[in-house]
Image (tube, rainbow, N blue to C red):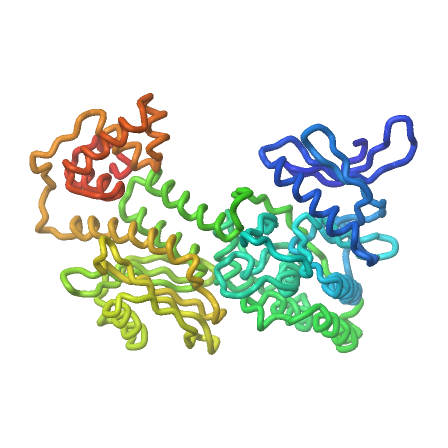
Length: 537
């Protein structure tokens, strides 16, 4: 390629000339990386969907090209730039903004009429011709034809897309199908970013973006409120509604609102220039596994993060805080409690709540009796029934979701996870309960040892005559670091069966049944070297 238009770690887009020809080609090419299989699949999906669309306003692929292990697409050329690039180059008046909104709405309406969901709308997949102001959609690698039969195995292998622009329903944390309203949400994120110069939410990984889409309101500065017409802000916030039922139901409704505000905006506003402080392209780490859906990828990310917390953090209290924060994010909750049962009394051990767009975790250690009557009643019922309680609840916005998940360990009730989301009535789907239970069990184990440390009558811990061999201590250290049996065997250069035999001896000596119990018990009894153990001071 002799002119690069766009490049990221996985693809390259630009102009090229065939050997012996002066014809300029517009090409997208997959780069050598660990995602070749995924990127090749996206190329084929884009060609299959976009090449058959009978409509204007799309970057139309002409021909797929195979070059060794990688694929490429040739497109019908257009002289366009990405939306992000356009706003970096131009100041846009309010009236131009409204016209742009109308053009994008018309194009999205036509795409949905063709029974196609784009599912990857962002500033890099909307193109504008600077001279004509015509708008085009590109990036159909994740697009879905609604009229096609779904995968019989229930997999949606190309629904990873770009986490900062994905709708709540695409995360699998809300009981709602993915339809045209997912594209409208992504358009809302895109327009918000172009209008304010920043994304409506802040996050650093896929799980953080998932939680933001579910439970954190868009962040708008005082300056943005003053300089952006209220009519445009109303459109943005309706596009960004967490509950699909509260969004625009189709692109026709969005187009009608853009047309209406074009007539309503005061003439003094229409020529006002909106200076766009365009943000850099978000960097997103991929958790993609071809055999997994995106919600399952997020589940795996939560499990991996919990192992990293145990392997890297040295303070038990901080371990508990980080795991409780992880629970709130995994669930897509605004608020959560973890209640334990101590000597027959229910204690609110941990709380997490979104305050001013930040997730705040605390360890109040309060009796359940000290809580409000409504929450106390729900948790008490769950403790008695030992059954999951999930319902639409009354929240600050008049509706919401509540979940009470009993935490049973060895068939005994050990606590309850209580969660709220006031922004949507369909949060907390059963498919997420297994990971939530696992994370909550880990926090309860940590809490049990913290409670013993908090008791001044405990005195110094004693090993009670228990001793571990040097090899057994090595294995406990590696268990705490989150390594699997196979990884421990590789680290110690022994057979996996040898590791299993050592672990059986460790469990027998410490009188425990789980990895986390073994690590915590060895720490409590001071059987590990403090500077090496992950819970050392």
